[in-house]
Amino acid sequence: MAGDAVEACMAAYYRAFREADIERMMDLWADRPDIICIHPGSPRAHRGTTEVMESWLLVFSRELNIGIEPRVVGRCEGADSLGLVIEEAITRPGDVAPTGTLLLSQTWRRTADQGPGEWRLMFHHASHGRRANPDPQGVFMPDGGGQTRH
Image (cartoon, rainbow, N blue to C red):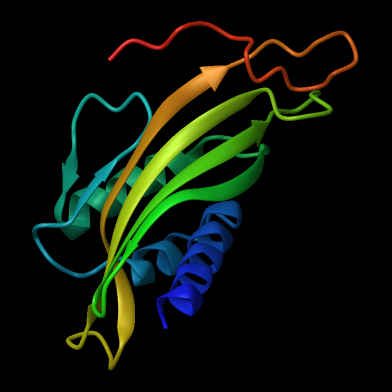
């Protein structure tokens, strides 16, 4: 049940993100005033459909020619809810291997109001992980990079 939901939700999210497709991205979100989206480095939480859409428009207005390799590192599944923790390995232009990470948490909910059994995003929080310096051969050094403070 939810294993398929994890794959479907992630595939839809990363397709919308990679294509910078605002319509596709917003189709993933619940149309509610209590949804929340936080982007890396964002000074605040974006709440409600309008603010969430505007926040994604800003993200999509930047150059997004980065490689992203997502990996689910945590999950909590229920009949109508799905919580994910995802680590994204980031490859920037000119890098031959990932040199940084982002950490995401997402809460998805199965809603009946937007179609039978449709999964919709309720919360999305992305934070900077670490940026490691590549070694001379361009291989990611997992213990490289600085320290993160919360």
